Amino acid sequence: MINDARLPWHEAHWRQLQQRRAAGRLPHALLLTGPAGLGKGVFARRLAQGLLCATPDTEGNACGHCRACHLFQAGSHPDYLAIRPEEDHKIAENNSSKKKSKVIKIDQVRDFCVFLSYTSHYGGYKIVLVEPADRLHVNAANSLLKTLEEPPGDSLLLLVTAQAACLPATVRSRCQVISFNKPSHEVARPWLASQLSGSLEPMALLDVANGAPLAALAYADGERWRRRQSLMEDYEQVIAGQLDPIRAAENWIQGNLTENLRWLINWHTDLIRLKMNPGSTDFRNPDARSALRNWAIRQSPRRLFERLDAAIRMHTLCTTTQVNTQLLLEVFLSSASGKEKSNTF
Image 1 (cartoon, one colour):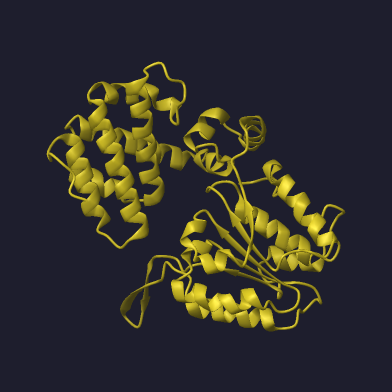
Image 2 (tube, one colour):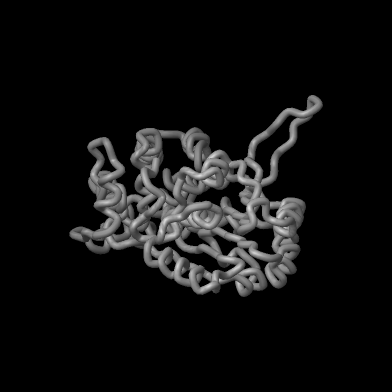
């Protein structure tokens, strides 16, 4: 858990926005973009609370003690609304099973457009946070355009996404873009070390998280770290022909599938680095170097490139389309074990 919302790699963006606010030029719509794990949502909520606070400090940070701050922290501030997709799980209703939507629907957008049109309860900003904005249904995104073109009063729309390209160009062009980049190790490592209480090495976590500090902090959760290790052991057994690919696929679809597949891509990227340059120190998974070296020995460079391409295709299909993920994983893992001669997707 983050001990402080004021993340050091955010400060340049924060100062720029506060300068614009002081000059009366704060945009009505901000698109916060950049890789996952950089705290874009943290930044957006910090900004929203600071704007709604009755007594912010000289840097624009919320005081944390006024009534507005207490309401914000409780999730009940009448001038703030957070919009997210419904959770993807099944619910029972009238003895029937329904699946909640993974997208932000047009009705949700219409509701918050009406919310923005109301007079502020406290005479200040009306703020809506949409996260992740790339999950806006195409019709929902289109219904947002009028509000973006003609924003009511002191309203602020905060769109947060790690995949800005998935938003329509018509939406992106009507927002001021703030691009977040991965911080240098000189900035990220001391911050991460200050958040850790165990014996995990900050640099190893950052390497696995591709330099994203909040993703690295999440990996410090023992359960996720054990999950990664378990999947790596499964994959090694599949390659060696010691584990049935179908059983392995059942394990791989559990938990955060997107994250599981990103790990798979990162492992194959490191395998290629090892194969082409055994002495390479440019590693995403330095803690797994020994296991990856053993995998690399067993396969040709061409085979490794084919496996990486297949892993990337599978990640794309599983995260952007409605497909049978279990079947795709079975095909991929069967190919790894040598039971299939080629991938079919």
